[in-house]
Length: 456
Image (cartoon, rainbow, N blue to C red; front, side, top):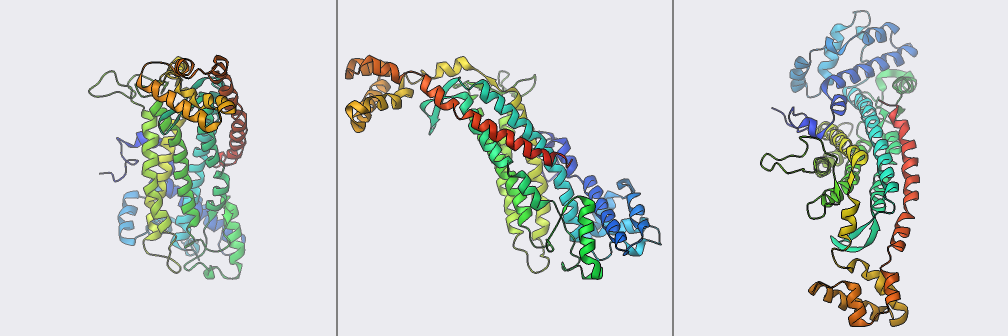
């Protein structure tokens, strides 16, 4: 039995990448905890609080030396996986160094610092995908800077834009969230070392030196004070991932609509067997959009336990910290699957320019009503111009004539004013002007993300 879609052999590959699942699986947690204990032993050896041989003995232990099934059964009894882990590792150490192992620290130090190492690897995977997505969407935006399509407001045709502009809006939203990643990382990639109640009293006068050496050994930041009950950074990590999924879903929602049969302006890249139906052989369902939208929806609920964990009683709460173990790995997993699918879209989105052009005429000129009213306002006044065009638009809706024809014949509007109003050039120029600004934002964000890419 599986309790998460991400853990499932059937649905796991749909919603999360193998790489991200590997970052947060049980074996990876054991590896991270061994790294943490080894770093602590090295830090204590530097201050003379542990023999150098302890770190060497810990480094020689392989994750395969530990029995996961046994650790799992004992975790159910102990309440925390670190307790049986420490017991199992202690049994593998030489008697000469065993008394110095895990000295002065506590279970949460090991678990939280191991999680920081896992998050660093997870963020590196996220950063790699984000860089490719930003680059891919930038290329589409530039390529279609002059491809006119319908701008939509409340689901209705509003005024012409270009498809390049629409993609630039998606890309800007993704870049805005992605650009916060290094700042978020600076607060979550922190070594936790506080001992039973956060004071490191068990490490004596050299506690500060050990804390600093411990963080350096792992390449993590040093906390100003024990993070045991300061859970805002973890909550921030989860909410950042949820926001990232929201930005990806912003694009996926548009793409799914534009790929619908009646609109047909876009299509996901296709390969045999992708997006089919068990009953309808003609179907090509938008799989990438589906995964992204589902991930964004699921993520919102997963952020709640992270906020709840901020209400941490005294020096360690019961339950609040443990709830993070359910939520945070799932958020990373959902992000990985959504990013994988967004990368597919950014690198292979199929754009039907002819269909976009045809859809511009779906409302027989109403897409240019705003431009017509603007041309008439200097002569008629803004209110009168709006009223005339609104009346003409009602006539268009009730019949089969084009807005231009109605204005010419029923309202005696000059042909030269209508020529100006129905010219697509100004719409293209206005839309294209924004694209270089988003390119700059995307490039700056990609450069900033490279620092996270080194954490894999």
